Image (cartoon, rainbow over all chains, first blue to last red):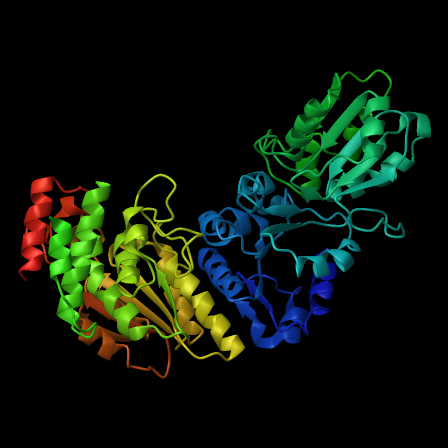
Length: 303
Length: 271
């Protein structure tokens, strides 16, 4: 996904208002962007707080300022700068966090970001984007050069089968139709479970929806119909429950009078065993592996 | 009583630095007294610097960031002194529904570019402004006023390293070195004296001035280092001009009683 992100950024190189700051990360990934925009690619060093303040200053001066680090260093270390310098002034700084969730796997807990968008969405006026597919950047990146809102962009890995074509980027996308219920997955998790869904007959597979933009936009009519017509609803995300997309969706459903009794929210749980491993290992510990998510739609599964 | 004392300070020319300082001090005291709020010590240490900045230094090409946001009172009075804020504006200081909050607001005052108050933000913000000017090939400088205790914050050093490495010679950092911070003196709390030597060690052109000598700041700002940023360490007195407040910790926090206000006004008016 980082490669696709970089490719799309390079396509914007002719914009005179484009400045990109990295917190000394991006080796073997962002070099093409550095070569494309020259002195407007700034390595701000291992100093994320200052990087965000500088970006705010640049944005105040009319620049489209982007900041980049791995996800935990992008949202947690400079939180006050994001809050005070960027969000209080409604500056359209784009903050890119690579490897959201358990993306950095066995690198350990300090390198995970399982609270990122929940924490950031407490800030007024901020958007969080969680693209699921490489092709998302084709439309997403140009749109971010016109947004007037502070934005957090969480990068992960594309996890769909390679030869499948994803629908164009949208806050809500339906990937699979089924009859056994509805599975809403946030960002790349949707891609990870897509193929497993399709292996099931229509009667035992869920409708699969991908959510890629927060705060949660109004539910599409078709999603509302899916939830209303089939009682089982599972929401899966690589993020802790507090501040999650699932909480926001549940609140929307409650307001719409659509509370379902057969509801499961599958989230990051931290480190249940106290052990570390790959992203896949941590997802499995949290019940976020495709088989676990789909088991909820088996006939006798209790939610 | 205070109003008449203020009106009695007749400054035929804004170039009369001592006179405009006296007038601004009286207005600052009046504003804080009428609002019943403290933070006077750091406001009085910064006031002469801010008067010089707004009257004589800033051009339409320059931008200013008050990193020590707790001196917002002095900032508002300096803006009043140059006619950017009115008496009615200052009467709203600290009131419900005001633009004039105790620390500079995010919106509502055109001359305030950034809300500050949490220390450690201004130098990085100004670095972004300076870098933007460089990209745009625009003249002018990004000027930032910090406190001295603020240099306890790691983000200040992040920003200084950045400004130096990026050679932002269109950035100026002015330090209000009044020697007192939140709960002790700067040497008692986290001693990094002499502060100017630290800036020099980072390779910055660093000047030291008397922060109550407005002409000294005006002259120091004429310095154009080949490599940036320029740092000016301005030695000041917390509570300057009111003897019972000078160099006393409590005037970081306390509001004045009526008797104290009267005494302060008498002293300032007769200086």
